[in-house]
Length: 470
Ligand code: FAD
Image (cartoon, rainbow, N blue to C red; front, top):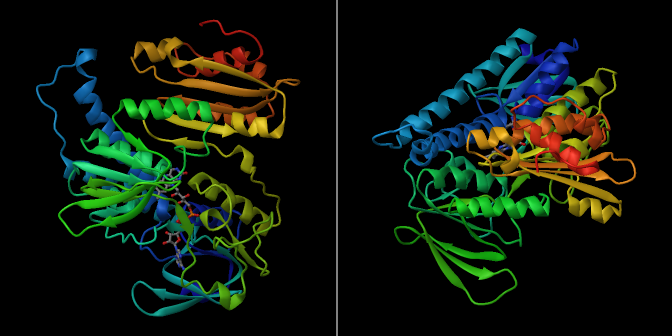
């Protein structure tokens, strides 16, 4: 096979980390092969993560708007119904088109694509059990591990992807559950809880910790939780799931306060386990070549993404750092740039994080809690979307922009946005952070009117001076 000629770069895993690394390597003139076991490119993100979840979030939002908001905008409908198979088909079509798109990009850039399960024979050889059956050995001067992550299970809870589902099952339920219990209040649980809540499920989120999305700025988190509660999402925080019983028709959960105490029970039709993700390296043969991992099973790398084994690199969800698709992509590009003898760089303090609920919550840089912990003197500037003309014009004005800047220099330290489309708005702040901008830099930048982005400008004004519209 073509894979048996020596490559400059072999990438194991075709997710956002791996496929981007492969394309970039080929663009830099390196002979490149990418190995993927799934039968489709795009990894977790495209097949069972970012993309299908955003498709369902959009479709369910449209339904919810049609049912609850169209009338107040003067759009009268006689009836609104969910056609779940059609909604799922639209999601599947989006995923299918995008995976084929990456295959096209591989062809265009002359990346060799080997479909099968890769395992190390040596630091420069990967044996692949191909999906067609049979085996091929792919050789490379440099091998990049981009095998990603998998759902983290909970002890004693067996995921059958029907009544007890992971995010994967929650993306393709065949009917809307009457009662959905979500275990884990991270962004994936809240996004999937939103989808099914909008489609009619009663959603209860059970979380062991005291707060939802622990990485979020505390003040924004409070507003966010209130917003979700207004959408009828119920929260049981500081609560531990002791056991899950599937003996009867539905599912019976036994709960207990995190600190210990009396047990209670909760009924559900479907339980979503979304308690996090773990690095995936099963069957890869890391021990055979002696690649070091930490206690959590993440592959340890230096700033050039090199493992302790020369010529073997790792990127994305399988190494420490935020488990996000865009972070995996940045890793992939930088890693390949180093391999090609150039410089690469990823600044993990400037990776934006977005929760794609409605409103969305997006942030970059430090939270107020982190700034306090650093002992930096800081200023806070806030602006509510209730005072933003565009948000009022479209009657979708729930949310706030919050900026944290160093008191002495006005340098921006962190930006947190809760609003419709916050995931798009945040990039102005990401760029500002990259350029070491001050809040005054944003405030003196002309922003088009009427746009949601003006709220960022006003929050910047509020940071070092006064806003106009409040
Ligand atoms: P992965 O995407 O996991 O890809 C690894 C690939 O390697 C897989 O396709 C796997 O089949 C393959 N593989 C593994 N082992 C082998 C082997 N031995 N041989 C061959 N192939 C192998 N992130 C965001 O940034 N934004 C979002 O909105 C978002 N939403 C998400 C929603 C859900 C429901 C989930 C589950 C995740 C979401 N994520 C999101 C996280 C995102 O999916 C991951 O951070 C991202 O996919 C990591 O990319 P990766 O390339 O490191 O790994």
